[in-house]
Image 1 (cartoon, rainbow, N blue to C red):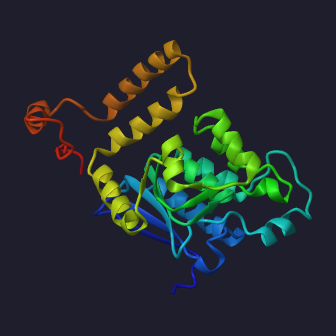
Image 2 (image 1 turned 180 degrees about the vertical axis):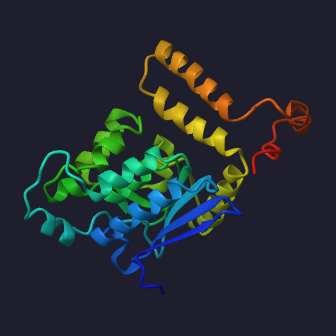
Length: 269
């Protein structure tokens, strides 16, 4: 097994980057060195215009059991200042802001800082028997970073408080039911399901994907009137970069007989 605790692979030909947490013996808990590597790699992927999708996964039987508490305890011996740079805060914001579509592949334990990573991704496929929760309350914390990402998922408030206040875990099936996961699948099917989704999304136009992400995150917290106005501006911005109507005839032909996702825009590559 590689000694690298974060293994990143980039394929310009496939338009996909894969970032795998690789500390299975520690349930992929996040050390400071791991988070530093993630930040460097995410920034590099962000600037790579060949990449449309980033898949965040993990080796072993767990996605991420949170921050390395020994590293965290060491950090807490130093003076903390408001607005300080901190690994999970920076990673979650980088994932949210990058133009690529991000997909979390979640198996086993997904706790605390792992939930922050899950919630920072645009899409998330989880194993049905995953164990997703926030145990911070048990040791005397409220779950920094994980908390704002959890409540910004827009899941029902009482569900979010149940997760943050009890320390109990949800299964992948339960997490999908309330909207914390996009979809739950049998554990044996997780890797193939994520790979198929990543390849499907990577077949779409890069500009379309980016603007769909901009629109979603910009409009979600606006009033309806402001969301409609912002949407018009975002649509104008998209048309500056590409023509969404240059292959209408072939698209309509692909949809005869019912909806289909097999159509590929000619300039998507």
